Length: 318
Image 1 (tube, rainbow, N blue to C red):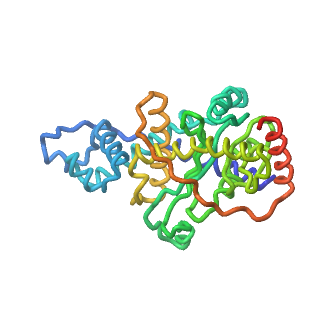
Image 2 (cartoon, one colour):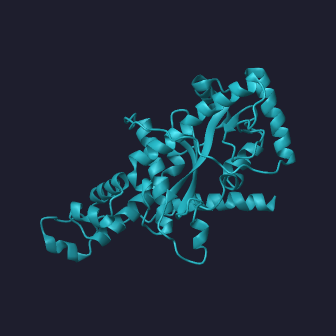
Image 3 (cartoon, rainbow, N blue to C red):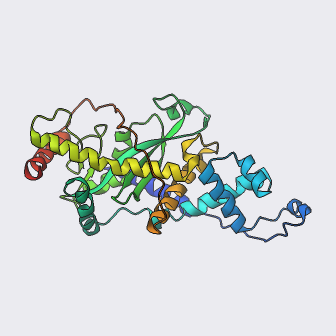
């Protein structure tokens, strides 16, 4: 129990860190006077925002962005750092996991996709490439593909909005470990979402609240269940795809300090959700083929119970 409380405290601490934002003092300057840049005053907030959005959308080197916007590179770095922190501060308002009643209403939209009942969201992880973070634990950030990354967990709804994002784990950490240590796992274990399920790929352990595909479908019902599961999985793949297309910085190695890198991921997720809420057109995304994942070797008592829940659902609905 103490370990579980420590996990929750750590995630809450992470959210509190996002809220500890020092709002910079904004002093407008006369951009027609080149010597004004030497005065030490801050650049206008709207210009900081434009610099940041250009960087997030293009993934250009900050020096390139600074040249285009006619400001010093150091000013561009500071602007991006300040603005992504301010945007990440909004995460609790724009990245929300639904309450049980709201989740039950949302489940009908998932059902319309491929006939999967009781789905409250799809969970998966994606690797965000980063520069070497250095330090004694640098190899923890090297993922199995050989590059340095953050393994970012997301849970999305049927409209591709993120309901939960965790962007603090090194690339070498397995998806299932990230989920087991996150706040949502603890929340679902309390039982308030009974009859509702997350969908996850075979890299996750089967749980009473987390449905995974069948590795060896034996009957026609099993095969129909797997087809519906895979078709519904398309939501999270598209959500990550749209996120990376909208914010090209996430598709190339982020060359920022690790704390800023984590805030950039959260800030992009916030902006992504805002764009969907405002019905901004999404770029077409070509969904990649399902990734081969490391299967969990051992079944525990929870997984055996979950297998029975999954089988009962298959027999009732498929």
